[in-house]
Image 1 (tube, rainbow, N blue to C red):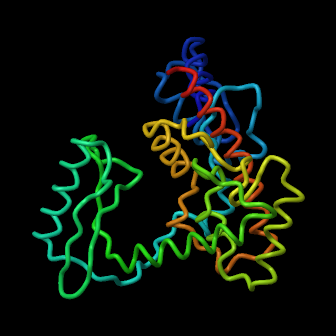
Image 2 (spheres, rainbow, N blue to C red):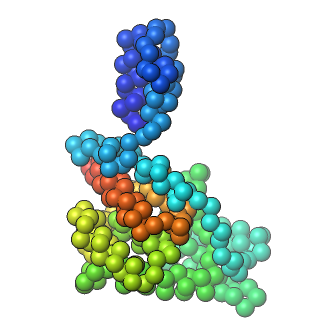
Length: 275
């Protein structure tokens, strides 16, 4: 629930009133929790991110419109990949955690071989509940495939000169890739060009305007928090499935993405300003 609703509920309770039912009937004698719940029910039809966005307000925690629920937060089967036995995998991850604690990264970490497959370690964006780094074991072949896929996404989504040096993509490569999933090559090219022409606040690919921390100045805790906010907003590429969406629906979804990212920009500014 938004801070505005909670504040409104508190004001109602302080005045001795409560909203009940869809008609907004006013009655006396309820507590703040009741008022919050009633306001939540009255607000079940949430404004879209585009409608709710207020440029002069602080971070709002906007979410994409519920009309796009068939395409987000979906369970998607993972492709099978080679793996280490459980005990070996746990020991290898623990080695990675120890290395992270010592030097702050997995740079130069030891690789292992099992049944003809080479495995390495990768630090996930999201940390564990304990605060420890989340380390995953990744086959070398998977890493190579992911790197190749990333290069293809960068080329496809970058119009003009590639300006990437360092930084993080504001409009994630994986997100745009997922939204275009199922489109033919011609439609994908047209989609990127349409975003470039019609969305003045949204840039794709390796353009400076699409990079957060282009000088490497984005701290990891803030970077991780950004991804958490994106997931909360419904922008988790791993859980998107637009294969049955129309071209128009995809563009309408990107309009929601546009305003969620504007809201995330406020979050980044607030976080960086408080350091």
